[in-house]
Length: 324
Image 1 (cartoon, rainbow, N blue to C red):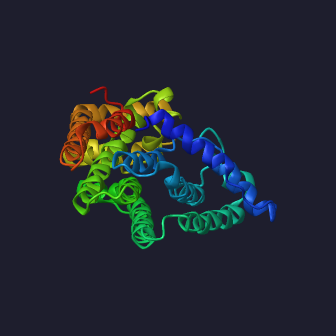
Image 2 (image 1 turned 90 degrees about the horizontal axis):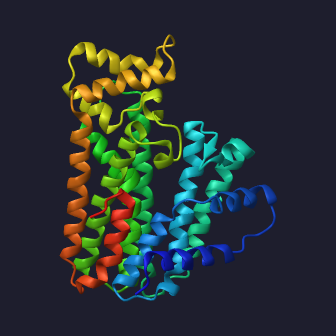
Image 3 (image 1 turned 90 degrees about the vertical axis):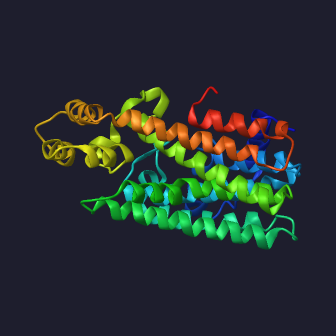
């Protein structure tokens, strides 16, 4: 079995060898720029680790892993347009560099190219892989739409938010894991379990990301702290605080982000004071731990030797920043 570093190196080497057409230049250059722009390669790594855990051919799974990464980066190109985001992974976004029209079309081409990569999957497994992939892709779009809908709604329930991040974040991880398990010829029961593992892990990962945005460091988050607060985003922290706060504190949560008389640091401090008052960080950390433990417990139910899940456990710990 290959460890996480070996899996990642194998994937990066394969990705570097993918040859895209040179023309039209303004269609393909943004794709190369996006795909070579770093990122943790979380989703293809998980696919390959799952394939390896069930005894599959990791090398043969590389094109399918690349399809998952291509799809993920396609969503980022379109997300940046919707969010009017000028920066992605510490450098100018495709949207900022080439404009909206190029970002839309190059993103569309990435989605199509993902299917070209999927064509290289073993013929006997391709129909099942295509179904997992297309179901996953549609659910990611549903999650994005819910996220946009929440921006204009005055009230959002915590349960609605959890459903949204399951669709927008967890489902892509779960699709990658399921496809890896299929390529490894896992049993139906194990495919269902590995899907659940990735769903729970994805929820823990997104909740952790929400926490880091307000309570982490710039080194941990990779960008300035407090962005969600300054944008007035309805994160899990905000929704839990709104559900517990008195009316005065709700007003603080509703309007601080758009108060032109306050500096950014003051806005962040004021909202975090409300979070702290209602013990929101402890609640979210408990949820992160619960989801993480559920994910690991799911691995215990797999019909394979326990040692074959060790690299998946390490992957999970690294993703959510857990030492145990």
